[in-house]
Image (cartoon, rainbow, N blue to C red; front, side):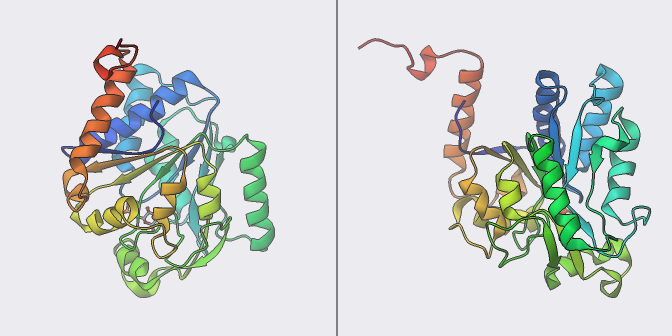
Length: 275
Ligand code: GLP
């Protein structure tokens, strides 16, 4: 296994989402009681659809899985249509055989956020840590709700949303004024502790954030760039999201080598050769 920031560029978001779902499904088959970190937003939607299909058509079993979501809007109850808990129910949990008690989403209406955030971190720890974290990315390069300027060592906490994020999410709330101003979110440090991350980005509106994340410097101004410090990140992109990357040929070479390794075709890689 080549551990690094892998960049997989698929022809379109559907193919990219199938690829992401395959990583999740492979893990589930290998470790049925795995811990998944889940994201909301439009980016993981098709991945969740494919996981539902795999559950229905191929019996992919979620009965022993535990999940932790990245974030939740402050002030929204779990039944609010725009809450991330509702998003997860509607787009994944209601369609697979996961136990509701094994799904964790931060509580946007906690009375004591300091205690709630500490307990959320503790629950992740007690579950054995996150095996695979799915991530989207904001147009300002944020992961979860870690807006530009967030500490790269941050833990689950309250965060003010940036104006760019409020603008991006206004469409779901019927106007900017209705978007909550605060969120409770896993920190960058929390995310970096997961064993593997899959970052999904589709569309040319994500191209700059992806360039900054993959090929820019590690900076708190683009919190996704902290993933460069992670032991195993897989960025799965469509062509438009990858369009500003300058090393696309190299990423394709790495993927070719990875496939040969996985297929055990070591000789073609010069492994075990003589001379
Ligand atoms: C929100 C979420 C992020 C998500 C981002 C991008 O800010 N907190 O987790 O990655 O939106 O959303 P989308 O995938 O819809 O572009």
